Amino acid sequence: MTTIEPTGAEDVAWNLSDLYASGDDPRIESDFAEAETATAAFRDRYYGKVAALLPAELAAAIDERERIEAIATRALYFAHLEFSTDMADTARGALVSRLGEKAAGLETQLLFFGLEWAAIEDEPAAATLADSALDHWRHWLAAQRVFRPYVLTEPEEKILTEKSVSGVTAWSRLYEEVLGAMRIDLPDADEPVSLETAMAKLYATDRDVRRGAAEAVTAALQPGLRTRTSIFNTILVDKWIDDRLRSYPTWITSRNLSNETTDEAVQALIDAATSRYDVPQRYYRLKAKLLGLDGLEYYDRFAPVAEDASKTPWAVAREVVVGAYADFSGEAGDAVERFFDEGWIDAPVRPDKRHGAFCATNVPGVHPYVFMNYTGDRRSILTLAHEMGHALHGSMAQPLGYFNASTPLTTAETASVFGEALTFKRLLAAEDDPRKRLDLLTGQLEDAIATTFRQIAMNRFENATHTERREQGELSADRINEIWIECQTALFGDSVGVGGYESWWSYVPHFTNVPGYVYAYAYGYLFALSIFRSYQREGDSMVEPYLDLLRTGGSKAPEELARMVGLDLTDPSIWASGIEAISDDLDEAEALAAEIGLG
Image 1 (cartoon, rainbow, N blue to C red):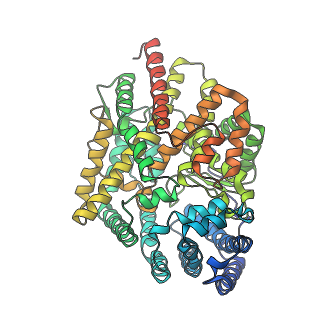
Image 2: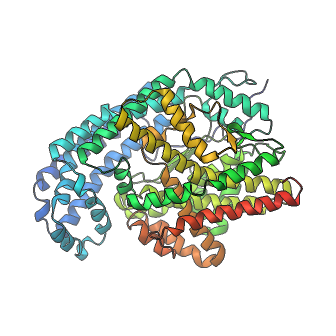
Image 3: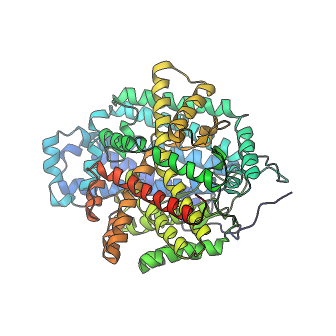
């Protein structure tokens, strides 16, 4: 019988008092009351008048709207952060629901502003944007206008906003609660464990442990599969209705516009990745040889190729991650270390805690907060590095304010992937043993494959399910399973067996929380990889341009951000170049394996 190995992260809980003292803090109600009063005054002052505002008046109006939204968002962030650490707490759930309803009410009152701005004809809008009084808000205003062809009337927009609280938002929350409550009966555990803990077993050296964990996860996914299928179908049809009402040409157009990119650019990324599925297939064939297997099964993909699968204590992970950022820049290292010192991280694996990891990057008026489930495996160290990249990005962009600090998903992953690369470089440099170096290198390749090729395969799954739901109606669990396996088989070819993997789509919350989101990981990864390769070539001369990029937040378009570090995002070859870099790493792994007689 085994128990969950402690890591030292068990007591690393965040302190949310910089936001509110507790869910009962009276300031939550008084802040929302202030936001409601300010919203009513804003509507009285500006409703029906946006087109007539002088540039300086328009800038002042946006200043006030940002202030109002920041007040409400701050409280809502607190509620969601509290809830994420214990989704079984009904009081926390009720606070999320109540504040979400209040926030939706505010949003319906403020909708007119964006609608009136979008309704202005292009020529007078361009003249307004050219005025120096709008220098601070120029990009934000321009980004609002890309939705001009797809906005509805104000009454229609109000209905959609209000109904989202009891519609897609509620279904997404239920999906997360179902996953958070899931318990896995591992063969060697004395009590059921969380999904996070069970998934960590897929990194075990012992194949029987990996197989047992995978079978236990599959068994745990089965009882609630019908419920999760129903929720997924509901979200699919909800998005279809919304897209149809707005006349979006494809299911993913709205996501692409939010990401400040185009359907054509995203398709170029997808085509580049799917055309190179030979890279993951080649890697998995190598890994089978390294493990002494005739072929891999899906639960073998994360197995370490070296014998040492020991856990890394939290204190060591902290030292590695902070050191990696500090080696790059003292400013970056100091900023990252504050999160550990100040209690801005929640790290333990707990019952009823939300699955996965995230950084609340743009919390109005305060610093970001980092959330994760630290299990002590190598992936957890790099996950910590990833989220600390988001934290650094948010901290450096914070002076821009709530609106301008926010980044589209396509560039939101820039600092996180870059931070992972820095941390991996540090881990590799500290390891002399060839076998362990190979383990690190293969781990890096697995992360690259998961972030690029796997995310694109999941995009293909989303594309197929959204399309088929619109064309043929509700999808059964069996049919969704089939689509999932079809997309996974395209990715793996015959290099990985997928028998038993059919229902594993149903533990991925991105499909329900943010439809269309997943390709942004590949976009951001390949973009960040290009920046990192430039840093490797040019050294310290890249440090300040990169930090300037982070300080710019979302106040410029992704193409402008790329130019700050000497890259061109409009050139489709950037994707092929990034993928070739992954292939080069694979060449190195194959050479190292041959050198030590394992290939």
